[in-house]
Length: 278
Image (cartoon, rainbow, N blue to C red; front, side, top):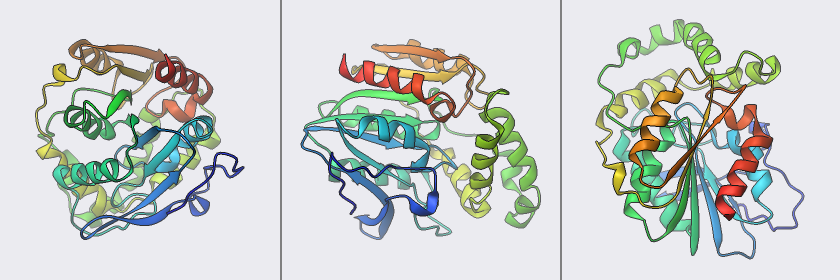
């Protein structure tokens, strides 16, 4: 486990090979790349990335919060530096991983920040831990529901690899605002293109078992942040989720899309800090 003190000058940066993540056994037969930052505080922020993402996508938020909060983030199975087996990507498997990480590293006061598919894990985690989680921050959010049609993901992996450029182009178009720095877009796209297609196919198929959940039972405060131009989880879905949650507020960020936390990090960080500390 990597333990960084509050006075450390080490940053959680964009270079995936240099990230301060270590392999941690989180439960029997399951290891993940986990980043732990510890200070003298009873408050902890947990980050959960989305499908095809990685812990490093939170680097702006981690570096903004790490002087005041304990930090826990990790690469989901098959992502980033975590192991990449051929099986184990069903929703229930990953949900158990998320619960194991939270149980192992939780503090007295906890905040959970999740993006896209990570929202599908954060919401049930909050339902089961209403006394241990003080607030939720959700990016690219919509009401979780089972995926019924997976389209091209039914194709054999060898064909999926062949048409990867189509997926890559669609990702860039829908995940970023048209004015986002092309260098950032290309960097994220090149990293995303390294995700094994067998993993992505298994992950998408695993979304069929996302359970229906009554989010109206989540009473803790929730902040939903969406990019105005998000083509993967449009603002309309975020609004519907916010309406179902009894104690939610919605912030729409201009000149940003699905990866709003790296497109507009300063504004996003201000929103998070204000929400957590109010």
